[in-house]
Length: 241
Ligand code: TYD
Image (cartoon, rainbow, N blue to C red; front, side):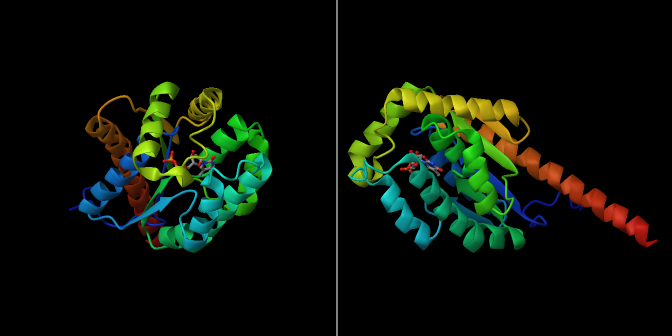
């Protein structure tokens, strides 16, 4: 059997896949479903959630999402997001990739671009400048952005907050609809700027249909990566001769 056909074998350097989308888009469910599917196929997987990701990140998350922290300004909010992210990158994500794992992260830097850069008005360049300090040049191999109408996403997020998450999860969901429109528009702009990496997935459909679209993208990426590995291996064999 050729390496191209083998599923589940770790990929050199791992793969970094992120999920993005407005609140209530269903991306967390999709991240979980993808991680489960990859594990069934035999891949080693690390699941990550931002803000959070590590025990230190979880402590930072509580500050960020606490609705009592109304006075939290945009720049400290951005720096806290990246404090949690930097810890996650160094402590969890980079070591997992070095072991050949597929890292599936529910949100990453694109969230900061959409929420702090666009919706909060700090600008993309400010976010990217902090990213350069915090993330060691790490950028996702693939970003799946679950796209949903702002109003639909917000009503899903509000009913989720009422039913389970409780007040401590609610600070971001409480922003005005205009804020969330800007978030969605920023994701569309990211997909226009980086169409290879950022794929918009229609999130208005049922969970299984969305999961199938996600899987199609991931399967294609893994296939591309395997072909690259194979041709590099063939090149180094012919160089050895
Ligand atoms: P969470 O309850 O995890 O919501 P979701 O399931 O929608 O991800 O809250 C995370 C909130 O933090 C969410 O509203 C988006 C926001 N956020 C930022 O503003 N910037 C960031 O960099 C990240 C990672 C999240």
